[in-house]
Image: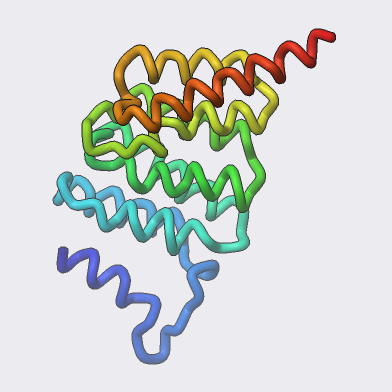
Length: 176
């Protein structure tokens, strides 16, 4: 935790007010990875990687931080899904990179199986697939969520059954 505090304080020391985009991201990635090794339960390194260091306008540096979060997610998906979910939304809405967002969402749906993963996170992938025009795949994933009992409340079940009917109508219109 002290190492994390040191790292964050580095760019705002007196006389060293370097914006994130001027940092050496190879070294930054090394620091964040090492901090995660020292404290694998801690999530703060991934939080700052996805919410601060990945927000720079430099595409290569942003991608480096996004890759770090994605790679580290697989080491502890049950704890690390929040940072990847955030990145999924950034890729979908800010970067408009739907294939990247779908990759992240797919990883979450396949590996973050805990009960503490909210329904909206579990349904990111079908939502992104719908936006990509992949209605058949979205339909299949939503049906799977219903069958596996991810969607539990009667109101949610009814809402998603209605949504499945809407997708069916959209697919029927495409065939006409």
